Image (cartoon, rainbow, N blue to C red; front, side):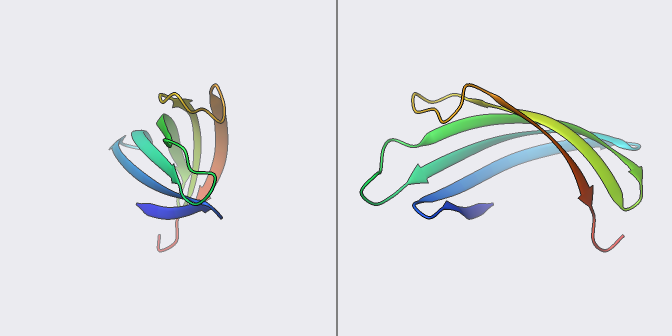
Length: 88
């Protein structure tokens, strides 16, 4: 997936997931590349997410991100979210 990230950055995300029954896990890598006057080498981060689809179409997920490049916006971060899957 390629997407605008902020008004001066673009991000590319590559990931893979595995689902078994109602549970899934996902790994991804994201490259955030700034452009314009504030450009630097960019930021690369690894992500891990685990979740469950506890009631169709609702899913709950928890994950963490860890930057692996010299440029860092954070040391690490955690997230939790509820997801509603359209079309189920």
